[in-house]
Length: 408
Image 1 (tube, rainbow, N blue to C red):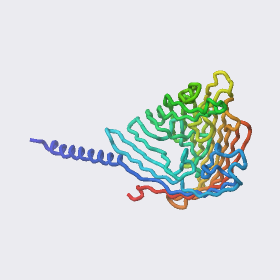
Image 2: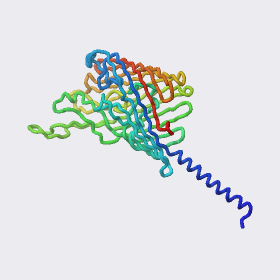
Image 3: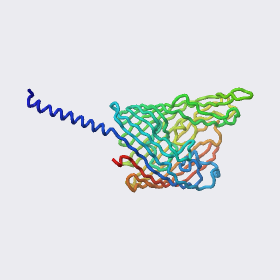
Image 4: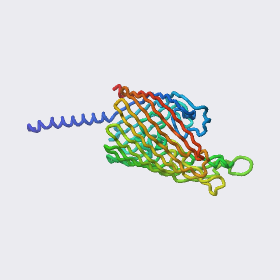
């Protein structure tokens, strides 16, 4: 026979268990989410110089002409919706941890699609616990130093690349350490190799993935991050390996060099929203990872040099920007960035050596999820032989954000 205390404790215990189950269910429900998000955006750009037709909707110093008449007379206007973006992201409890997935693209064509309005993949990855696999920001990169600007490409002196990767992260609260292997694509400058008839050009040889690591420390004041990379940069030249008539294609030359880099970045908060975003990066063979400019490797010396192999090209990059919010409805971002290459002797005189980028804007937020504003952008390019060119432009942007959460 149960006592009065037993009769009282049993319902209380059952209620506690039920309440715990309900809390667990609510927590699990909160861990589940699915969102479709993005924005429609249009940019009217008035260029006071004449841009490369494939890059008229973005200012990339490496694409600036050093010949005033290369692309025609000065002055060019364009209206583009290429920045428009669409993405989905989801969170789901799996095996006691949260599975996070994301897929996102915009319409800004690059590479062989440069100048086109077409799908460009930005993110496609999954993360479960400490493991992430897919395409997203490189560990060598710090996306938090990208300023609150509207020009698509942004500062050229910062690391900015989203390669396919496999990543592991150790989270220790305010600071965490991550390491990854990343896709090893490299840009090889054939340079003076092209001057030799039997050397029709060089191509990259990617034998090993790039190894990247990152340590990030965050606090109320902001954040500090160190990114590092080590990579093997290889080159091979294919051609006729036997004298006489006929073609016997094969590898007639191959060489490699070691690339490395260190990226130091910080975000310093001033008040609730204002922030200084800055970074400095140095390395050899890191051009692929930079937001713009340069080549990863080039010939050591001109034709006739004994053992004319390749050399990883040194590069230095700097980016400093300040974001200021005048009010909830107005903001300004301004700053300067550059990168500079220490060219090899085997690179040709018209090779990119230095690029500069600066911008200033005034943005207005008339209502939630709506942005409109104007931005002034300036850039320069300097070649190894001293030839230079510049571009100055104004960009007027209108952006309309959306999210499926608005309908929940």
